[in-house]
Amino acid sequence: MKYYIATDHAGIDFKSFIASLLESKGYEVVDLGPFTTDRVDYPDYAKKLCHDVLADEGSKGILICGTGIGMSLAANKVKGIRAALCHDAYTASMARAHNDANVLVMGARVLGLGTAESVLDAWLAGTFEGGRHADRIAKLES
Ligand code: RB5
Image (cartoon, rainbow, N blue to C red; front, side):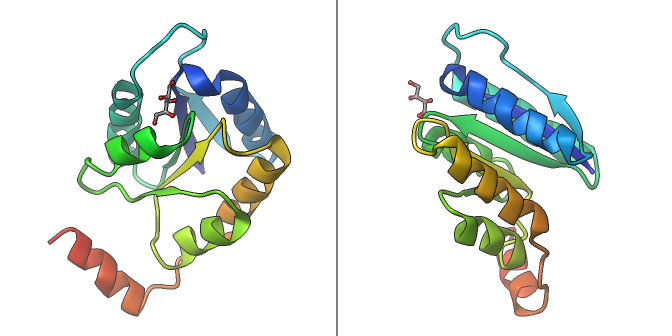
């Protein structure tokens, strides 16, 4: 599976850490940047990533900012994107199982790297349960 990943200036090192983990697990990673700590605006990166994910069937995305809140707000404005801000393994697992989230959002100033790895692992292991959850997701788009 292919993962698009992006951040703002608050998550440069965090992004590299997550991208390396994904690559070590055999995922294809497309890093949309940024690549320096110069200040950027999170909506620009969220929108780019979300449109790339939607255009590339089967792919998913990971967005990072300081808290994860700005990226979540921006990503969920894009129709077809279900972005889940996750701070622990349980929410990451449920974001896949119940919400069929296609974008994982994390806060680089909130999560230690050990917790971030457990969030990522739970997300990657999660599978959508469908059924009543699919009906609810359909209502998000109506
Ligand atoms: C940048 O300072 C910070 O505001 C941003 O990374 C994010 O936390 C916004 O929600």
